[in-house]
Length: 133
Image 1: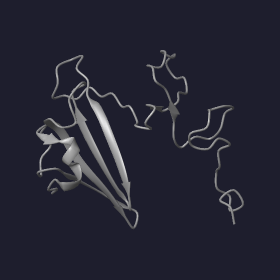
Image 2 (image 1 turned 180 degrees about the vertical axis):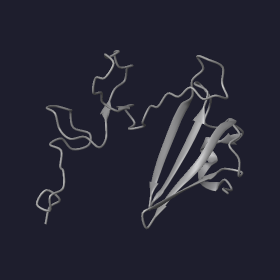
Image 3 (image 1 turned 90 degrees about the vertical axis):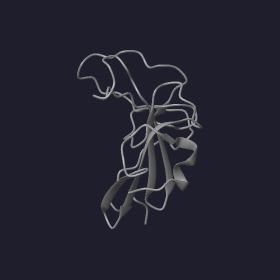
Image 4 (image 1 turned 120 degrees about the vertical axis):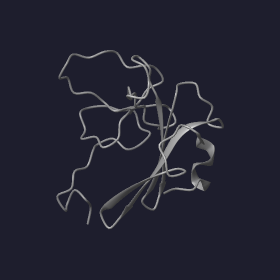
């Protein structure tokens, strides 16, 4: 039985097809350029690059006003997702990333830090082999 027949929500555009209409989205829209500004309260699309990576801009307390971080998200499946944050332009091979792992099991979500801390001293490329606690 399809998810629509069971009462689930189904969009009308599959992954990697051109976006059209107004489907219910659980993903986002790919863009190779920065989206234009919208009015306060407007509905917006999630912004992904052409590789399907979600773009998130944050202003953490640890940085000076006006500083931003790039967020990389790697969903490796089986309920495991790695998240890394670094200054824009940081090489994924540089030991300048804050990395944590999210694990979902039986509906519970667990977050653990690489090296057991939130320091920006990890290599994003090594995320799967880092020690987490």
